[in-house]
Length: 293
Length: 290
Image: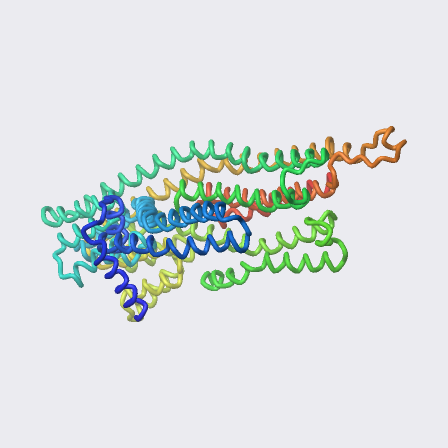
């Protein structure tokens, strides 16, 4: 509680300094709303600026002392290297503050769109046995395993039950805070169906069929992409390190060592780390392309 | 039983690491491997023991993962057929619980037995939705939960029950078609990945037997006359290079299996069984040609 209070005071201090001088980044503002990281773009950006300024002096001094005292470099080199470290540090800091919400929004949108066919399918099944849309959403939020979808559905229920909004307003508000544009448009359509025909069953049926056919087409495209990936795998992961090992072994016979390490250690490192590293990267690529069910 | 299986599985996760540590201690204490002199074991027996320990550690994990995947697919496959039978029974004039009971008799799966148990509990006075919730907990499978929810909702839907179940069945059939298409169209990659491993083994065996071994054992006459020790690979021995290629092959086998699991079954763990098969092929190849 104390930490939270301190953080709030820090944010309030930052906002009091920088309010009115905050640049506008639409993507960041949208990401903050849609991921729920921060309700206010202005407060978030003020905190970002203040933190970026605060970390500058200690980082620069620490880097300078390290270069001067530990590495024993001269002053000019130490200043240049410390400035470089400062730029890298600042870059990482800005990336964390600006990049993280944007990346999180993208990841959640991807997660939602990967499972949309299942959610809409279950919704269409539920809609054939019940008419009340709120009950359907409630059931969906109970069944759903995806965190990103659960957040959107629970937002709707929160606005409705705790926020005291009408069903239409709750749908529109949940759509505003939904990371996926596709799912947001479905929520907006649900709001308009609620105010007109009320026939959710037919709508869910059509949308579920569309989502499944989109998923099927995407899968067919992915299968052709996997063929390319398989070639990449054979070349990069299977034969690449092998060639590398042979080249290094042959060069060692000529008393040439490209690295300041014993050749045996270099070859062991290639054997034990290059394959897992390259295969891990390939698996990450596959996971991001194929998604999960 | 399935819930117990899931819990047991977690105990097996540290097993490969534990067995590798034990095998390292064993090989070091029996002087088969000396980490102070060599970075990788050059003795084939030491490699066999360490890699064997890794494979033994992976077997129970692969078994549970494969079983869990098969169980999931079994449930997924039975759902649309089950719903069709239930809809037909309802159309035939049976009331909901009797129609459900008759449908469970047609399919001998754990879903059927859990549903039969739920019907009996309902006959004994438990509310239908509560009985279904208990069945859902008993099955403890992500795909079974929405399906049982559909059945529970259809029970209370009255005259709309047949319609609701037919709608659910058509959705589950579409899902099944998608999953089957995916599996059948990507199955070809099992062959592709196995062939790529065989290509790797062929290339490595060729390099070891036709390039490295002749060069490391070759001694020119002039060098022998002047007692010169000429070594084309510096301090690297043929056995060390063979060990490097063996470990690369083993790691490639492990990851290739996981890749098969992701591409075909959309489940990394389901591919572990292929990893073990490929590791065995790699180990046998190196034992024959080393």
